[in-house]
Amino acid sequence: MSGNFSFSFSGDDIEDEGESNSPAPNVSAPVQTQPTASAFPVPGKPLLPATRHDLHQMLSQLPSKVAYGILDVHLDGAGRIQLPRRELWDVRVQLMAEDEGGDTEPGLGNHDVKTGVYEGGFKSWESSVDLVKVLSLSNGFLADVDVTPRLIELGCGTALPSLALFQWSLNLRKDSALSIVLADYNPTVLQLVTLPNFILCWALHQRAELPLLENAFSSEGELDLTPEVLRAFDEFLSVRRISLSFFSGAWSTEFIDLVSSVRVPMIGDGPRQRTIILGAETIYSPFALSSFTHTIFSFMEQERAQGNSAEAFVGAKKLYFGVGGSLDDFVTKARELGAHVEELREETEGVRRGVVRCSLP
Image (cartoon, rainbow, N blue to C red; front, top):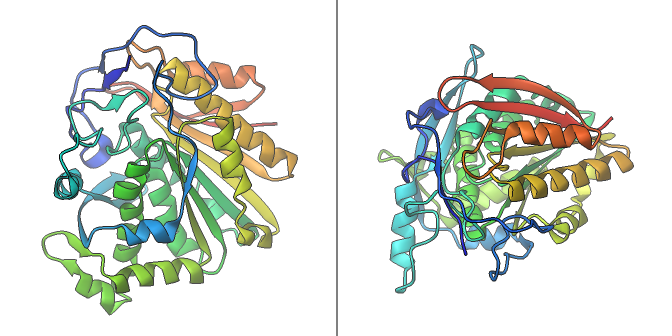
């Protein structure tokens, strides 16, 4: 049994501002069994195990070039931010070129989510744009040299919230460390869109300073990923003390332990550590809601036990029709577990959405 969830994007990505003129989500849901401790359970189908992916290995597996577009996000009267994203059609072209007669990569067909197979990471979701807008008002910690930030984005996909914080950090943090943990159920999502988006963000920011990058961009909206470009990206991260860590697999105790076991040495250099956990459109079913809540509370409790501050920013729809997940259910669950939950943003036009901040006392 598998569940194919269609959130009315019809295979297309969001446009500027993350707006969608589609009707409320149409969801085809399976008959649910009792939830387990892991996310996305499908009877008879094993879940993807928690896995860490080496950055240098991922860099070595990139294509020779990527095509990209720019998403303009207007920050509620406080300017705008432009976030690059690899084009979905470019991902399809790469996969077709590499195809040896197998099935089309999940997520590039007609379904936005295939439970236990693909969890929506190739596409940018409306709530990820909402998170970017909220974070634009809460990114002052990036300029605090007495704080070492650690960002953890769960279900990152195209990683718009982390991309925004990364871009802001390039201006606000010249000499201070930054750790970014990017997690998605599917390793192919990390390889095909998450990492390329970070390279694009860096390249566009540094384009005027590095002739190498100016020559790597084409007028057709493409970036050549030459060995020299990738080496410059890696060296930049090292010089700026920016750590990118990639994890795939289902949210589970093993996943939590794996992410927690990876302690970047630079984190200990700062007087204080602050962990920011991000999640957009991660609670679209009771299974996902339960596992996601357990995961973020585990991380926050670990940080509190070590004397560090931690908080989670969660963006989601008010209700995921037909499958039972909702932002209100998350808020209720979080408060039952003793968290302080603050509602930061609400979208009432179209499909109702919201963003909340969650922290432990």
